[in-house]
Length: 147
Image (cartoon, rainbow, N blue to C red; front, side):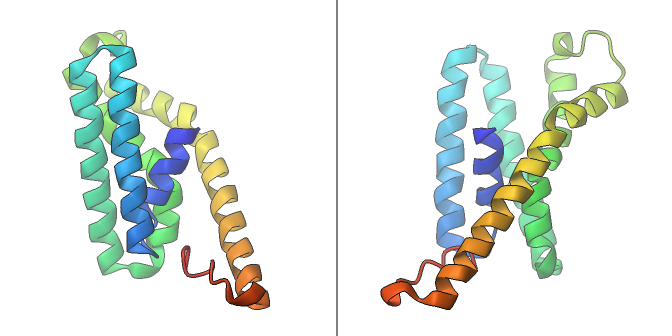
């Protein structure tokens, strides 16, 4: 769950500084997680896929800027697609003999609940930002962080 939220905010490109802070947090989170699973191959795949997802979402957002919020919410599924493909070939024992398509579908089924969580959190963050902007509580400009 935490991974999904960090990934979403790292891909949400409305405020580049905030996005970059979340990218650093995600990499640190991935490094910390790699110490617990003791699998160097997965750690390298994990960070490589994160960089790939970041690049793909950045490129698509440059072409279609209005789609960035949707892509950031769906980033967990995009990440899941890429990490499942990479792990299927780099760590074949994890697939347990499943075909690639089934392995990817199982990854999507596991991660779909995080899309709902991401959408809910992003909507709540944007709405609270707009409310704070509208009321301008003592010139406190929190709204610029997410917009």
